[in-house]
Length: 326
View (cartoon, rainbow, N blue to C red):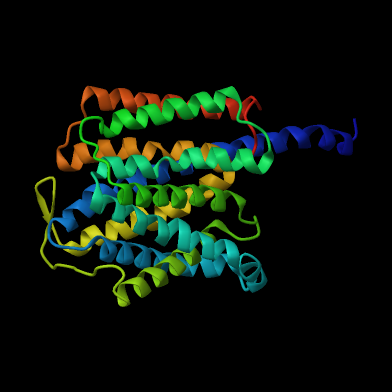
């Protein structure tokens, strides 16, 4: 057998192996991103109780993250400004809808209803992703995908444990659904942006756009501004306020958005959005570790259902029974 014939036989297998590795790394990136996003709760709460306004926290969180990613974003482009111009629509949508819009809508929902209810409404975004892919491809979700969605949503309800505390506020519900649109947009935009635009460039410039939008909204008085210099308390340990801000910016924003974008590109918006549901599970676990809020048995069952839903969707993708959206 000639070298050319041998290469022809090996290349498809090697290509398949590389593809599988890329998916596995994408899955790892998505899970770590969910954990990073989940870490924001305890640190944001520690700032809120000292007098910080949510929009101020969000602006600093996204602004610092944008500055951190700006250098790597510029380096990744290496002067290919044509790529940036060609993808300006995606970048603007990412920054305005997925970053600024999503967070503003979520905090407005939180102001009118329990946090658990607002978070549940936001994560209805995964259903919007499935509906979006269905509308775009004209192919109905496979039974495995539908089953995974049902399990994940049921698990989310149990994890949040909102059955006895939910209150109905029409305006709050509208804001919560707005946050769901922002969340769905994150997974769709991140997975559909052209491959010539590096993930770090999309995340970095997108957060820069989101920061500018949030600053403008606060300057015109559309969002409140308040901050405090008092120390924050995490698990009984007193930390300077900027330690919490840096965690929110570097871990819960820069790393979370970058890894989430990488994961969405590797997995597609459908699977990435379901994996993103584990953020709620991580948030509960971190609240237990950092705030001493021990999850109850119902929440643990809900976490298991979320993981089962993610696995069901992933199995459907691997078997080719679910629609592909990349």
